[in-house]
Amino acid sequence: MQTPQDTAEFVARPADAVAGLFPDQRGAQAAVASLQAAGFAPVEVRPRHPERCRLRDWGGDATIMNLYVEGLHKGHSLLVVPASRADRELIGRLLVRHQGHAVYYFTRDGVESLTVLV
View 1 (cartoon, one colour):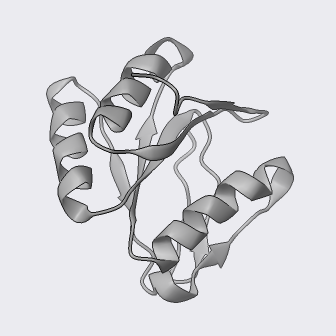
View 2: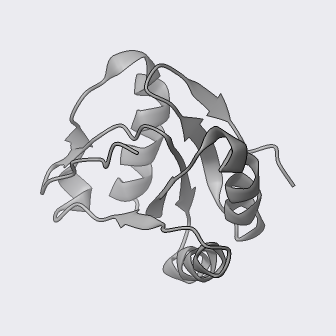
């Protein structure tokens, strides 16, 4: 996985990872616990100044990445989980089960929506 290089003001686009927003910290923490129990290593994206964060690179996925930035501005939590293609649906289901939304699997060259998973 390419680890996103987030800084105080920038949020990088993930690659080879599933990402999703959580409306509150409780849901994010529950998702982290479930993911860790399943053997995954989630990372919470925490820009130093979430109310001022911007995108590092826009690319073709600017609409999705803007959802993440807007969520961070509103105080939502953003989790990024390194994932193989084979694990993407399991991870997506775990995120959605804990109230994750805007759940997507990112590769270097594309993106796939996983929000509809139950």
